[in-house]
Length: 204
Image (cartoon, rainbow, N blue to C red; front, side, top):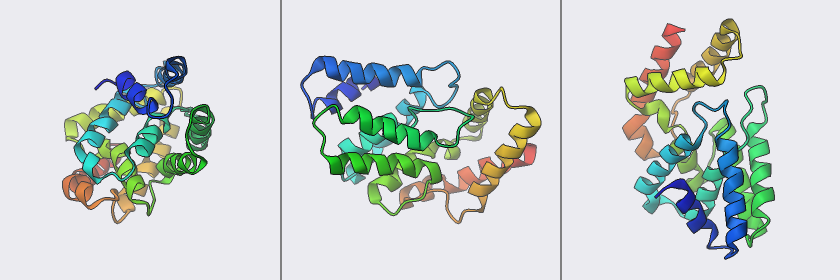
């Protein structure tokens, strides 16, 4: 299922206003299609939803998680430290336009915020942060391509500053007892993720 069809099907559970649904989708598409995005784009959303489709039986509230995924990187500015907060705010603002309960919006907000630290005790949110970090545990070749995409997003940052910041991020994940929150992802991807991160760090 393509992203637009997936989004329309999701939102149609809460409103039958096709114009409203299309308007919400256009805003998402516009943000994720910004020219400076080499990784945090529509392809990233597609990759996350591939994981969703594989592990859907484990997810307790699919709609909530799906909304959180669609909006989790909607605001992405490399110079800012509050992208997650702004994305969460944007999600709540947009989804308040349709028939969604406040408690539901609060859950979406918290799930998006969790992608900042990738720390959570909530079951569904654990899946979300693992889906978001799935790229770290891919094959070495695919991971190298990912690092090139991230560097492209930060191309305006001088090399010496980029390396310093990137090393800090890599070391943070390497030092964690576990990168992934779910047992399934730990079993499948933890070792490869640590391997990929360590290799990148050693080459910087």
